[in-house]
Image (cartoon, rainbow, N blue to C red):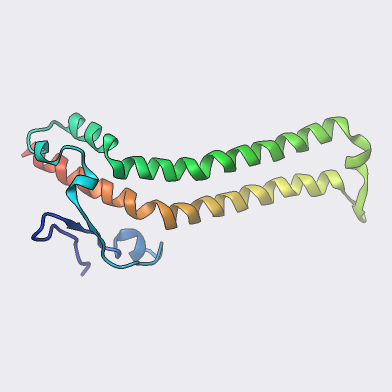
Length: 158
């Protein structure tokens, strides 16, 4: 049976490192960490009477949500820019540098084919790097936000 995280006596929520993703083999636990309510939400005393839309807006304004988005952007923006530059360089070279692209590398394999296959390899490597980054830097925080949001919306429905 999985251990559920809950609030402790000081009003703090303990993050359980063995969440669903860890149980599925994603990520490694790094111990329990207490997260004060004021770090999670900007208005914790007003959570009781909020509608679902207000709860989601409150979560969106929270420092935890902003950190998840910041971590996402720190990885995706440079990775997407680097991949697009690599792709454009390949397309430009293929259309303008015919002699370079036709140069044989090994046997019938030329520079154009190696670069084209490199596009596929780059796609797989980038996908692997994205999944790894998400698992190590964002999944736990995102699951924590999701758990808190669901808990708050359930409380608003009652």
